[in-house]
Amino acid sequence: MFTKAQQQTLLPVPSGLLQAPRLPRSPEPPLNSNGVTSLICPVKFSLIVPTYNERDNIEKLVQQLSRVLDQVLPDDYELIVVDDDSRDRTWELASQLMASYPSLRVMRRQQEKGLSTAVIRGWQVAKGEVLGVIDGDLQHPPDIVPQLLGAIANGADLAVASRHVDGGGVSSWSLTRRILSRGAQILGLVLLPRVVSSVSDPMSGYFVVRRSAIAGQILHPLGYKILLEVLGRGEINQLAEVGYVFQEREAGRSKVTWKQYVDYLHHLLRLRLSTGRLGWLSQRLEFPIGRFLRFAAVGLSGLVVDMGLLYLLHGLFGLGLTRSAIAASELAILNNFLWNDRWTFQDVAKRQRGNRTVLKRLIKFNVVCLMGVILKVLLLNLLFNGLHINAYLANFLAIVVVTIWNFWLNLKLSWRVTEMQPSPKA
Ligand code: GDD
Ligand code: MN
Image (cartoon, rainbow, N blue to C red; front, side, top):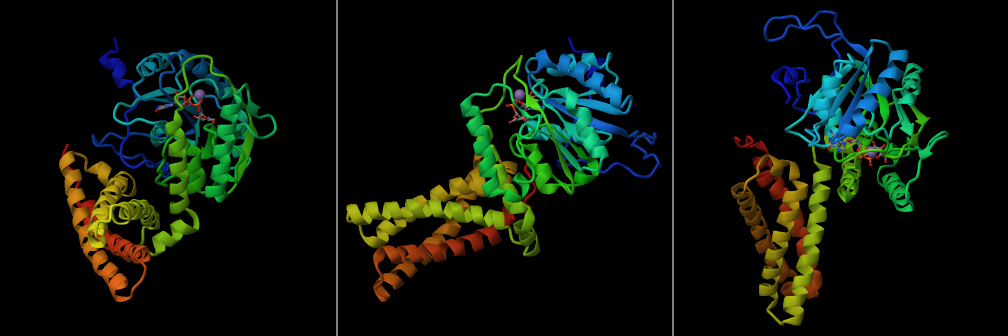
């Protein structure tokens, strides 16, 4: 049984934006709500250990990390286990270890899940001037932590444990996993060269970063690869790498599934659009370039649906051009709504769940698009009957014009209005 007293020894789970706060600089201790001074005693180093079902590994890991860190930073570090309410009760075992390891702190998250957010929530409560992360399954050898810290002491803002520099490697990965891992890296190089080429192992989940390089920066992690966020949004002027051999898992199971690869790709695209030159432009113009490109991509999928159906109905079944075009457009609208709701405006949609709100959005979207259809039919007739342009080319041109119209209207009406609505009460 986990008693109430034990529960109280757990760290509070922070909420709000995902970011590592700046450490208070002034020696003046802040007052908390009870008027009691709560002294924040910074430590040199906070190391986050994200865990999910790592019961068989956590004790050995804590023991090894403490041994290593007690030598280099006695009493000046903390280990923070952030567990996502593991079924095997890793959080419980970890909290029992706190008696023997005074530097150990434990957080049990029940509302939020995911490796990357776990790491940031850990940093949010961390007291260290230097922040770090290490896997909780012993696949990351603890004995290179001092080298990572040494690199920071020598001026690096970020020190990454890498499998792809001298002294690095993987123990016995299958050819498939090697290919997948390298493939993901090459994809990253193409999509996000500035970030991905700056480090030999951008997939690493084992690194140490100076708090000041990321403090106050809102992070938007997706999936597993938190290092991408740090590289993409942090202020990293000097980077160091330390080789390590990725160990075999002795206990427990990896949580990686195909979804992590999809998330990774999505994450790369998002960083690509929100950081660097594109991000700067987007901010300057106050125009959501990323969102527009997603909207346009969805529009492209709608174009395929629309053209295909027009060919089917008009070309094959001989239905009149106008009627075929209307039917094709309506199905394309439905297609576009589904993708836009799931992807383009995912953040808005997530805050407004429930069938009724989805239906409302669908109706709004549909009205905007139906006005577009009318515009399209008018244009199509003008181009086809008036200017005698080929029916398919005319349809295509009309779609281009209407897509721009749709984006403008959805941006000004449906999207803006939805975004300003308060989130529904639970
Ligand atoms: N809190 C929390 N929540 N922890 C999680 C979650 C989650 O949803 N999912 C995984 N973890 C923890 C695991 O318990 C483990 O400690 C660590 O995160 C890594 O997860 P694994 O499932 O063991 O991943 P892996 O060994 O395949 O993954 C790693 O690939 C890289 C190399 O390509 C990454 O996680 C990197 O850290 C690693 O360097
Ligand atoms: Mn692992």
